[in-house]
Length: 216
Image 1: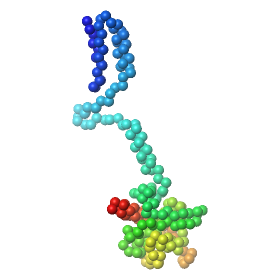
Image 2 (image 1 turned 90 degrees about the vertical axis):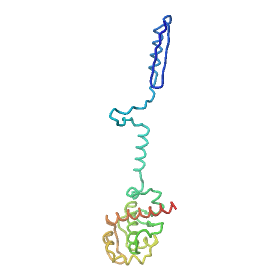
Image 3 (image 1 turned 180 degrees about the vertical axis):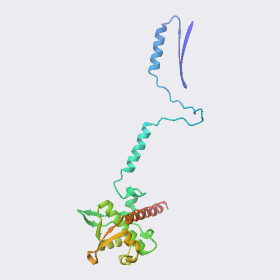
Image 4 (image 1 turned 135 degrees about the horizontal axis):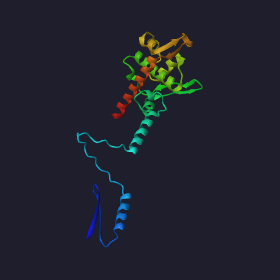
């Protein structure tokens, strides 16, 4: 008489046949060794009885890649970029961050693209450009207060006539965005929180304009 032992798992099927004359214990041992060394095939999960999708195990590699991506997003060296919707590449495409040595500003931040998107009037553009410059100085270089004359020159380097700054004294937002002290050559200016919020907003405008130009 012939004895048949069948092992099935999904599409995999193993069959062992033996006769009464053969060593039956040996056949069972071989089958046990096969099962011990067998890795189950991946089965497609059947839908649950209630029609809901079955729960699937997360791929450890996929989870690791996802976590690495999130860490990469958080690992931003530029503190301004961490506050806005822009990459560091986009930031440096529209702005020059300047250079500071031992709390002395050797080179002021400057806007590298046309400042037209910063406002409808020259005065508005000058104030918003100043907010951008002071935001970069504060966040990247820890410089909170500078001479007003230096800020006026920095605004001029960003493509806005220095003479416009004098006319911004009549614009209400100037005192909201900046804390000014002194007069004449000794006058200084510091950015206030509302001014920094505007600085972030205007940098995003510059980046949006850069993106639009890049798509054309």
